[in-house]
Image 1: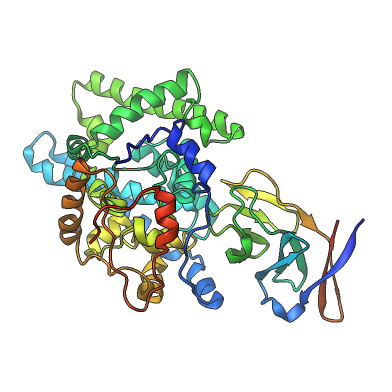
Image 2 (image 1 turned 180 degrees about the vertical axis):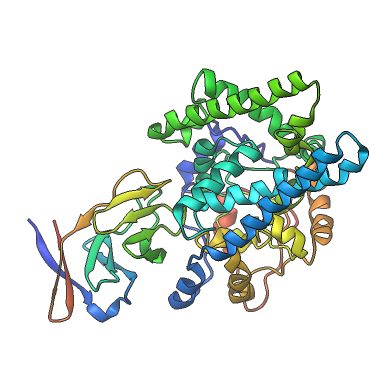
Length: 362
Length: 104
């Protein structure tokens, strides 16, 4: 059994570079150029519609929550506001970080900065960490965004639904960036030219959180923190629920997104919050396709992908036992069957990349 | 010594699109701009060496298919993170409906 070292400065990362697993050429389903060009086309209108709706709902829910505060009648409105703040911001951060949500660059940048603040990610750092996530998706020691490390620590996953590990990691790092500078691990994937921006963003965030805490102390109430900061905790559950499904229980150290990513059919509300990232194999294979075109991309390439999970619940039912098996055997992963119309997995290549045969697959 | 290389026919590339062109161990991207002009750059993105041929041309910008970094393909200027290093460009001429690029 292979013990994994997820440090970006550790031996697994170095080995991935040596073996060619890092920055490798990944499998892509073949899509005719004209069809792909049509899928990649950008448009402002879907994202403007969704952003107006999102921020409109947030203002409405927070306004009612403040009006009813401190009555318990305000609780449902805070919960709704929290999900939009602490979960929808994750997908907005993601899509606008790719620059695909809007056609107009400044719109992507504005929503990206707001979403980064709400989801508690330094916008300068995380733009680069996500680039690495796409270069080296679930390559141990290379991908800084591996959500479920092996062996699985279930307590950490459960705490994640309340945003605790993320916030616990964010605050000291924000203060480190603001007062000391760029962290050594960040220097492995953030270009030096961007280091001043990392520090500047951290200082602005520190200032906003400091002002919010000062206001709460002055008012003698946590109400300001219910609006800014705490929703990252009480509203995180949805993005954690959907995020765990992206790669959980699947292979690592492979270069075929069909082996390490999961597409899940979801209800319309979750798809709005998640901005269609439930089509996750499709997104990783073709990150230039905007969120609003992912259902069309899915229809175009599903013949070459494992069957999607039929619901969030069904996907958890598949993933959770796999995570439990990884407790006993870290190399275990779910290998989903491909339809007869698909190109087969490159077994030989992936076995060589793994350095060992995978555990029993399903 | 520089030389002009016959890369492709003008109608090999749709307007506002690009193709890959390989020559003498090097790889290039050749663009057909919306104004009808042709341009050539190095084929691979300066960020992670992904080939640009599968990218998206939007007016005078090429977007990398892997990380969405953008370049102005007329000048090679890096326009959007994660690309920071400019793309090398090559002179282009069109003769008799053929596109030639000048390489070293």
